[in-house]
Image (tube, rainbow, N blue to C red; front, top):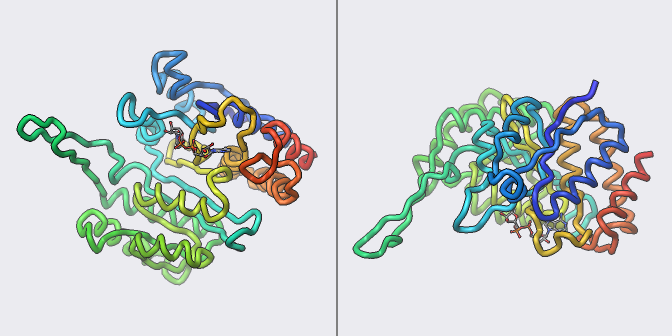
Length: 337
Ligand code: NAI
């Protein structure tokens, strides 16, 4: 029986990398029936709404979505649809695995960053403070950390470590300065870590020192868990250690739905040129297959992608080649046969 999955191709390079991913899943005989929906600028063009009701309804039914990047206007206009989707479906856990495919500056990186996805500075409560005749004399943003949110992301990180045969969880925080909010996150983390003592190693690091250690010796890290904004920044840093965002997938996972996506954006500079690297969305689809209980198929596609990249013959230009999105996709498909 086929599983219905909502497909949101997205904006910019989104539709072309989504097409590539759909072709690859079909070539691997993945039993998926796609329900195509729009969001972001494509939602505005079609339904005058960046997050149309029909898209939300579809995810409510399928509880599973694969999503291309969505454009977010900077400084003005509608708020991030990505953030809104996480809130709507309470997708509290953002999982971003990063692995060396072709050894470059670093040889052996295999890190999974787990970011709390619904709290912290991303709750969207901000305002300007008017002083005298300056309406923007100051701006305030509220960061909210709860014991409930901190404990559940910690438990998710430890359960992930257990189910994926990982050995260590590192909690990154800034509790030395933000003693209340970050302090609560750290306290909750230590509390949950006790339940896994003897099974999974636990350590905590201050986030700025952690950033340095990630650059100096990233191989020492295994699973990292952190709050929303630190997770946003550290996950891009980690992607940079293995060659950038072109191969960085992410899963947004809650108790009632999960949305898988590429970490990169809409790449407006190369949109429409047919040269985008579909690798990150393909890897996101592999994560989705694993989430669906189809680990073997996900691993098979990942291997085909990795081998194609290691061979270096038919890869897109961000990976040092000159292939188009379609040629790269065909090369992966030929290894799936
Ligand atoms: P970006 O990730 O779109 O682009 C940064 C650089 O990486 C560009 O030079 C781009 O060409 C390159 N790049 C990104 N993905 C690539 C791929 N698959 N293949 C080859 N090269 C690739 O980041 P930027 O420019 O900051 O954001 C553009 C738009 O994307 C904005 O509207 C932003 O809000 C949105 N965005 C959406 C995200 C999402 O939906 N998850 C995440 C990040 C940004």
